[in-house]
Length: 186
Image 1: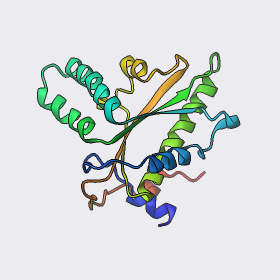
Image 2: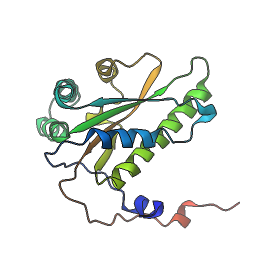
Image 3: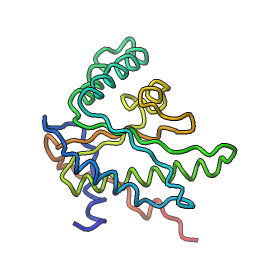
């Protein structure tokens, strides 16, 4: 499959089979991330991998967060937690913040976003489903996740990645605007 085909076929997968993901595949996905472009070769990423018991503890943190965020919507809490309960691998990805250099910090976040996209394409090639969460059950903006993974104060959580063998492959063809509608030639 070409890179362009992989990009066209890429979908957020939220439903996974009850099947462990091999450590070798997880390592391949993380290794693919480290090939992402990054300013001055700072390699500003760190990957926190959760499986098994760590995921059960993460579920407790996510439950408390979601119950506080949506106290009057128990169905939303329950449906959001389903992905945590059925995902075999969760990876939290952080970017290094550069004290006193806001531009370098932004560059690092951009590099980590590129690394996450590299992870997504690698997962696709390996037959794995992948979804990048930046809100909700991903807890990206909640200090509890930062504390739970033991991130350094200088690390910013950029995304929570959910990976597993897809329950089924989506066949929907997401309609996107034509690239020419989003392009200005100067």
